[in-house]
Image (cartoon, rainbow, N blue to C red; front, top):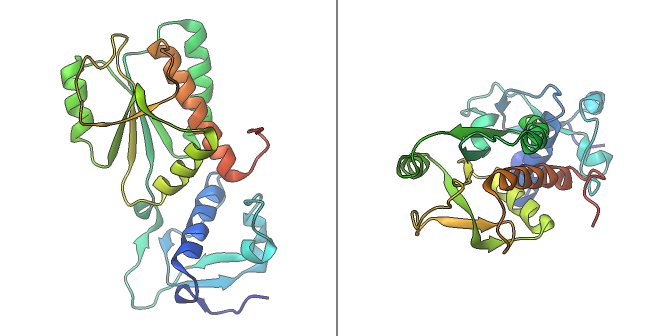
Length: 222
């Protein structure tokens, strides 16, 4: 049984990050969570019902940890302000009905995981300008960008979710980026070239897959 007054200082920074990721995953199931980031972690066996699933590497003792709403003197921060969210930006609406159906399906799935899809209809110069003006880190989807396995990408998503700022992924128009944004970071789904509408589906699926890998579900089969 965990002690009833276990302070966050008793945990290493890496363990604390794991706890934060765990609570983020729990929140994706629509379960109630404390609304502030408190100073204490306490044993709460009675609240195990709040944890329908947890990463397979953690046992019930870890699951029994939850944040305790503390009203003591130290400043409290909203939990949501301390976790990075993800945004996928598309240039233009998907016109192909079959591709749109797939994109809509994955967009619905990722919405519950804190991932938002934005559709832009600006000219490419204005689109780039809007992207670079956003706070957080930005990655353009480009066949010449850095490539990852699905497991590696899930590790990136896990790490980026712990940052205090958001992460943006942007897909260009059918003609590509046209030499714009040369200094911006880029991610590649493949060295092959795909239609930009299909790229949206592939990226949405990989974002969804990453979340499933992090949760430890059976969706991803190595």
